[in-house]
Amino acid sequence: MALAAAAFELPISLLFAGDGVLQLQAGQECAGIGVRNLGRLLASLPLYGIDYAYADAEAAARYGLDLATAPLPVRALDAGAITELIRGHDHLLAF
Image (cartoon, rainbow, N blue to C red; front, top):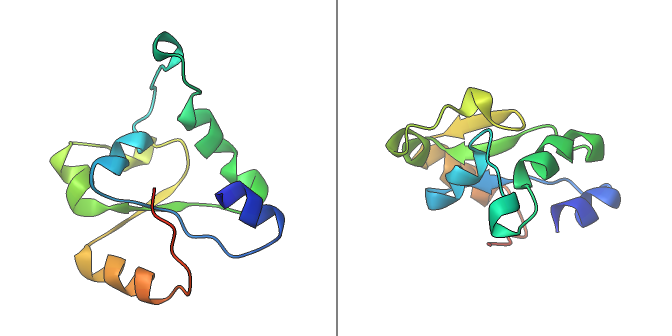
Protein backbone atom coordinates (compact mmCIF):
# COMPACT_ATOMS: atom_id res chain seq x y z
CA MET A 1 0.00 0.00 0.00
CA ALA A 2 2.75 2.43 0.92
CA LEU A 3 4.57 1.91 -2.37
CA ALA A 4 1.39 2.37 -4.39
CA ALA A 5 0.52 5.59 -2.58
CA ALA A 6 4.07 6.88 -2.86
CA ALA A 7 4.04 6.19 -6.60
CA PHE A 8 1.21 8.74 -6.80
CA GLU A 9 3.27 11.16 -4.68
CA LEU A 10 0.95 10.96 -1.68
CA PRO A 11 2.57 11.72 1.68
CA ILE A 12 3.22 8.50 3.59
CA SER A 13 4.08 7.82 7.22
CA LEU A 14 4.86 4.30 8.38
CA LEU A 15 4.52 3.46 12.08
CA PHE A 16 5.74 0.14 13.44
CA ALA A 17 4.08 -0.50 16.79
CA GLY A 18 3.86 -3.33 19.29
CA ASP A 19 5.18 -6.62 17.92
CA GLY A 20 5.40 -4.94 14.51
CA VAL A 21 8.70 -3.31 15.52
CA LEU A 22 10.30 -6.74 15.05
CA GLN A 23 9.98 -6.17 11.29
CA LEU A 24 12.72 -3.56 11.72
CA GLN A 25 15.26 -6.03 13.09
CA ALA A 26 18.31 -6.13 10.85
CA GLY A 27 19.62 -9.30 9.26
CA GLN A 28 16.43 -11.32 9.12
CA GLU A 29 16.64 -14.34 6.85
CA CYS A 30 13.27 -15.41 5.46
CA ALA A 31 14.16 -17.99 2.80
CA GLY A 32 13.64 -20.89 5.20
CA ILE A 33 9.99 -20.00 5.72
CA GLY A 34 9.28 -19.17 2.08
CA VAL A 35 8.49 -15.45 2.40
CA ARG A 36 10.09 -12.37 0.87
CA ASN A 37 12.68 -10.50 2.87
CA LEU A 38 10.88 -7.44 4.23
CA GLY A 39 14.20 -5.80 5.11
CA ARG A 40 15.08 -5.48 1.44
CA LEU A 41 11.71 -3.92 0.71
CA LEU A 42 12.07 -1.49 3.62
CA ALA A 43 15.56 -0.53 2.47
CA SER A 44 14.12 0.41 -0.94
CA LEU A 45 11.48 2.79 0.44
CA PRO A 46 13.68 5.92 0.10
CA LEU A 47 13.63 5.32 -3.66
CA TYR A 48 9.89 6.02 -3.46
CA GLY A 49 10.19 9.13 -1.31
CA ILE A 50 9.63 7.37 2.01
CA ASP A 51 12.86 8.41 3.69
CA TYR A 52 12.21 7.02 7.17
CA ALA A 53 9.67 5.23 9.34
CA TYR A 54 8.46 5.70 12.89
CA ALA A 55 8.68 3.09 15.64
CA ASP A 56 7.05 2.64 19.02
CA ALA A 57 10.01 3.40 21.31
CA GLU A 58 8.54 1.39 24.20
CA ALA A 59 8.08 -1.73 22.08
CA ALA A 60 11.56 -1.40 20.57
CA ALA A 61 13.04 -1.15 24.07
CA ARG A 62 10.98 -4.14 25.29
CA TYR A 63 12.50 -6.29 22.54
CA GLY A 64 15.98 -4.81 22.92
CA LEU A 65 15.83 -3.69 19.31
CA ASP A 66 18.59 -1.39 18.08
CA LEU A 67 16.75 0.89 15.66
CA ALA A 68 20.06 2.23 14.36
CA THR A 69 20.51 -1.09 12.53
CA ALA A 70 17.03 -1.10 10.94
CA PRO A 71 16.85 -1.47 7.14
CA LEU A 72 15.83 2.19 6.81
CA PRO A 73 16.14 5.21 9.09
CA VAL A 74 13.67 5.05 11.97
CA ARG A 75 12.50 7.72 14.37
CA ALA A 76 11.49 6.34 17.77
CA LEU A 77 8.34 7.88 19.26
CA ASP A 78 6.91 7.75 22.76
CA ALA A 79 3.17 7.23 23.33
CA GLY A 80 2.37 10.94 23.22
CA ALA A 81 4.24 11.48 19.97
CA ILE A 82 2.49 8.46 18.43
CA THR A 83 -0.87 9.99 19.34
CA GLU A 84 0.15 13.27 17.69
CA LEU A 85 1.41 11.47 14.59
CA ILE A 86 -1.92 9.66 14.21
CA ARG A 87 -3.94 12.84 14.81
CA GLY A 88 -1.99 14.52 12.02
CA HIS A 89 -3.27 12.12 9.37
CA ASP A 90 -6.63 11.98 7.63
CA HIS A 91 -6.41 8.31 6.64
CA LEU A 92 -5.01 5.36 8.58
CA LEU A 93 -4.41 1.81 7.46
CA ALA A 94 -3.47 -0.85 9.99
CA PHE A 95 -1.82 -4.17 9.13
